[in-house]
Length: 192
Image (tube, rainbow, N blue to C red):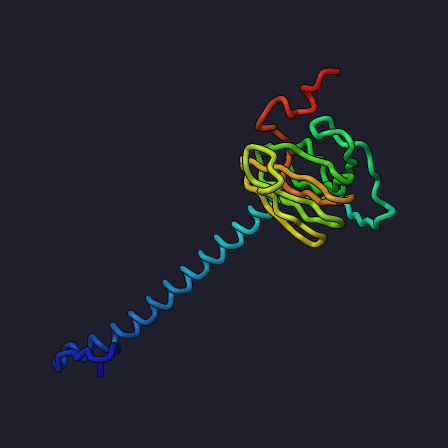
């Protein structure tokens, strides 16, 4: 009787004796190789997860915010005046994860711009509009109501505005930077 279906061994007495020795050796070798391969795979897997853990940014402290705990401040100079900002996690100006909220008044506009990293936006309250392109164009925008989410990959040209007061949460990996498509739109270039 053959180990593999459809495989016949010759009926030679010497081969029968060899078969009694070779088959157990073959089974043992396959089992040993399989065990070794599984052990190496587990070793690589644990090393990889250990490496991934060491590369993952550590959370420095536990934080929880209710709306009354959020500390709002004037927006940074790279955003048009009038917006308020709150930092919930990390430091948006440094490498690593960050989460911020922007509180935009009715009619607030951010001209066409890009970011060097992906930008993730969640609308917390109000209505926020996002459009893609290199010029501000309300007709090309998308209305985003509370609960909406958008992600813009690094380098994507986009613009935004609020109708009514809107609060949006932005999170990503810092440093968070903005480059306006038209340098004249950059508030940092405005004459003082």
